[in-house]
Length: 257
Image (cartoon, rainbow, N blue to C red):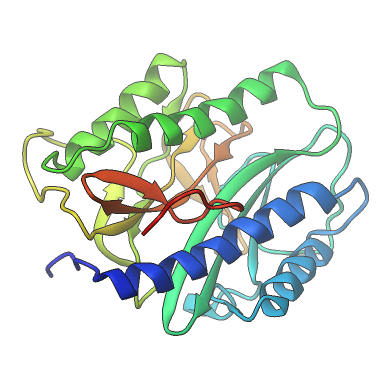
C-alpha cells in the first residue's frame, strides 16, 4: 500500500487533531497526582478530549476498553485503565489519540509520579531524547529504515534497548496507516520507502533496560519486557512540510502549515 501524501487542507485537519492530543497530555501531566486510579486518569483524559470537540480514538479501537493507555512502571505500552492507584515514585506512560473531522492524532509521554529515582529519570529521558533526536534529523529523501536506525543507535548508546515487535506508524484518516516504523533495523537501512513532503507519521521510541523481547500480560493488552524492569515510551505525530519534520502534537504549536 502506498504511503499517503497529504494536501495542505488535510495537514491543517491533522494539526487540529494533534493539538488536542498535545493539550490533553499536558493537562494530564499537570493534574495526575498520587492516589489516583488508572481509571480516574483515563476518565480525565476522555473528558478533556471531548470538551475540546474531539473523540478519544483509542476507545473501542481493536477492542481497547479505555481512552488512554495507562502504562505503569514495567508496562511499556498499551496499559489498560484499572482500579490500581499510582503512588509516589511510580512512572506512568500515557498514550492517547483523537479523532476530529475525520482525521487522527496520536502521542505519548512517560511522566513521574512525585519524586522518582535518578535511574527512572534517565530511563524517561532516553525515550524523550531519542524521539527529538530522530525528529531533528529527518530529511526528505532519507529512508524510513534510516530513521529506525537513528532511533536504535541513540537508544543503544544510552545503554538501553528498543522494544521489538511494536513500532511507529503512518496516521491520517485512520489511526494506523502505512508505513510501520520500528525503533530498530532488521536488514539494511538503505532499503525501502523514502520520506517525502506531505507524509504524516508517528514516531514512538519504546525503551527497555535489558531485554528487547516483549511479553503481553494476562489482560491481553499490557506489554512488558521479559526483563520485568521499568520501561519508558514517548511519541509525537509529525508531518513533513517544506523538507522538514513539523510536530503536530505539541500542546502549544509553533508551526505554520
